[in-house]
Image (cartoon, rainbow, N blue to C red; front, side, top):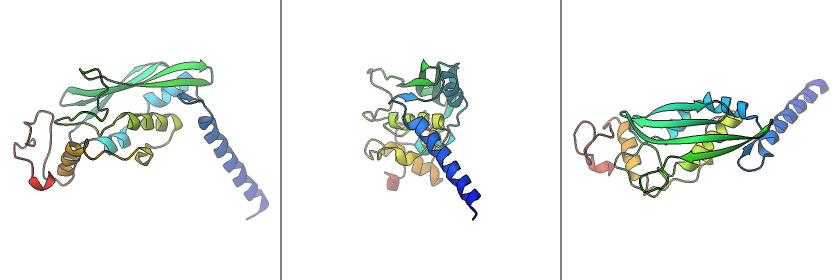
Length: 196
């Protein structure tokens, strides 16, 4: 390899390092992007990997609601019913930096939906959902794929219903809907004992 090629590679590595520092040097809760650029990345972001990694075996759909340069709200729905929503709110610090806050919809008891403290008969997403949402927002803003390995380990107890549903769907032996009678799947058959 000639000296010019080596210098080019070193230059590219340096640019990649600067790009990394550009995001990482921002204070917590802040990104080194204008509010408009942050909004564009969130509004046009792909949630496919997030949904694939976190869904619990019921069919879910994501609908985004946007307020240009201010916020993006994602509604997670199943069978026409909203299961939860979450919002990334943007507040410009200056023309090159933006504060990003995340809000998760609340349950009737005033706690965040899917916060890891509640059992759901037909859960939509693995709990707790907030760390996964934070990773999703970071990934979209940084222009990288959602990375489930950055999340804390799942609590198997709180996610047991999720794991049963997802396992049944992946094995092709069951399908689930939020309208199921507890203890059955959408075929109306009792859950398989081995899965419990």
